[in-house]
Length: 217
Image 1 (cartoon, rainbow, N blue to C red):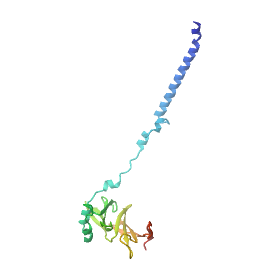
Image 2: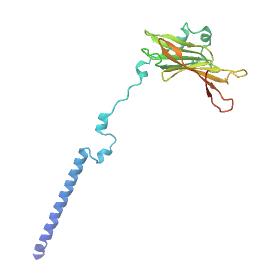
Image 3: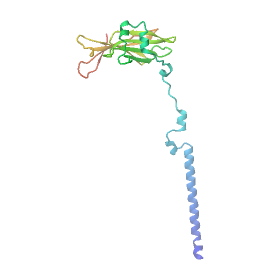
Image 4: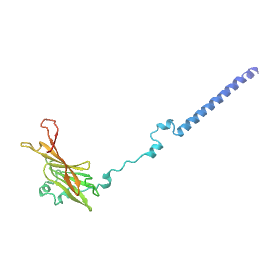
């Protein structure tokens, strides 16, 4: 019986140490859970999204185009426009099947109720611009507010400004290789488009060369 009695204090100390170790582990676990729940630096902070981030997120504004865009039939618009010359209307015919050579852009140029419409009429063979037009909404229908039929011509919207490019040819230039272009910005002022300062770009004659900007005097 002595052997059993002699082992009593050691076993008691071992039991006491085990209880202390378990208590310490439980206390550490409780502190870890509390830290995670309180938004500390625990594993929860490494997640893909926080509640605070979601709550503070700001929706990006919807594009203006989605609110004011109204699609048109550009071919019908041009053919029914009395401001368009007969020559351009005769050239406006399908190239392949029912595909017409027209480019269309929508955007805010005149601060109208809906986005303005820019239409470029091209030739089928060489895609040369023969007419550029801008249409503005006027009480539910589109009205012609700009016309350029000085071929080759092309109009586009550049950050709220109408940019019109007119290529020019010098003697001996083939139709596919003009000598340069003149780019003119137009701004909507007092109910009409007024031209700004033009830029003259002279194309390089060497292979792979680009246009060289030259201020138009």
